[in-house]
Structure formats: structure tokens, C-alpha cells
Image (tube, rainbow, N blue to C red; front, top):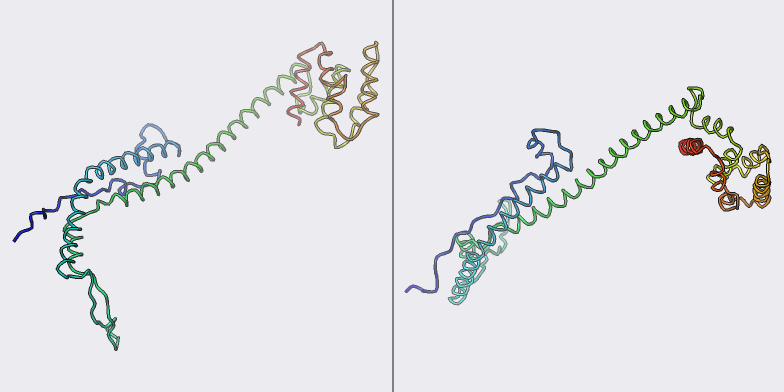
Length: 287
């Protein structure tokens, strides 16, 4: 008598597109024919291939869903029938553990029908393994990306430093030519020479440099004030204000930023704006 509720197992297509991929981005280098790719470009190619492969495996798994459900129902039906007629899921026998054993041991074994069910009625398509491969690949790609971005930032930073160095050299050359300074002049020497051309500039430079670094105290400002010549009432006010700052020096160079006649107030007193700009540029590089 045949049980009409039992039907043939349905075929299940195995997933495996993700597992066939190489997760090292370098393996995609040969796909670039026209230029040498960066690691980030290789990662983009690898990520696109991974997503495409995972999408294919996911589509296969979704298409397998009815067959998997059908075959699982068969497993349950057969297992229920075997249990109903008294066939256990496991059995045991006495065996020698090895050829050198003197005594037998009882070994538990699965019922043969369970193995046959797994062999002839598949209930898995390998999608779980592909998910594991996919997640592992994503993690590896993320690690590669962090390293690649760091290397790219280092390359960009090096190029920026080179560009800044070239610009600084050109600016230095222009300033040297503009003021007829010795060709071998460096930025520090440019500051020293240009500040001599204007008393307000000289005092402002001393105050600004002390604001930036007051490890030597206000000595540079004191010397600049001694060189400062008083020609009018405004000059008197400037000299008195700076002298007062020196008298109240408390170890903080910011006093020359905050006083009434600060370096910020002295820059505009220099009529030659180009001279001010060049001194400030030289101080920027000298620092």
C-alpha cells in the first residue's frame, strides 16, 4: 500500500557564486587595461563583484525556498513514520576502538535512514555558507579600505607638502628679487631685513613673534621698543602702551595681542601693504 501523502523530493540548486570569488582586491588588477588602478579602485571592483555574486546566490536561495520547504516536510514525514513503526534514530554496537584494542566499547550510531534522507532528499542549498563567505569578504575589504585610505592620505599629504615647498621657494625668490636681498637669504633673514624698513613693522614683528613664542620672555619687544623713534603724539601713545605691557609682563605673550596698541593695531600703520604681506609670509615660513 502506497502513502499518497509522500511525493518525490524536489531538486535544489546549490549556491556558490560568492565562494568562487577571490577576496583579495589585487586579483582584479588584470581587469584594468588602460591605467594602473589604485587600491581604492581595486576595492571598488572587488566590492561590486562581491555584491553581484551575493545577489545571484540570494536569488537562487529564494527560488529554492519552495523546494526546501517541500523536502523538509518529507524529512519530517518519513521520520515520523519510522518512529511510529518503532525504528529508533540511533543504535549502538560493541566495537574495538582500534586494531590494538583488547576490549570492545559500545559505539552509538545514527539510524541509516537518516543518512539516506540527507543523501537523497536535500534540504539545504549552501546559502548559509555563502553568507559566511560574504560577511568575511566584507570585513576583509573594510580592512583593506582603512589601509588604502591611510596610504592615500599619506600620498596626498606628501604631494601637498611638495606643493607648499615649491610655492614657498617661489615666494622667497620673488621677495628676494623685490627688495634686492642677497640670493642666499632664508626666511629668517628676510624677516630681519624687511622689518628694518619701518619702525611700526619692526615693533609689530617683535610683538607678534613674542605672542607666538614667549619662552625667552619679552626681550625682543623691549629691544624693538628701544629702537622705536617717537615722532608724534601717536608714537608717544604707542610707546607708552607697549612699555606698560612690558612693565606688567606676567609670562604670557598674549598681552601683546590684547593691549590697545597690539601688533594687530600696528600693521595698518605701515603704508606699504606689500611690505606687511611679505613680512607676514616670511614669518609664517620662519615658524
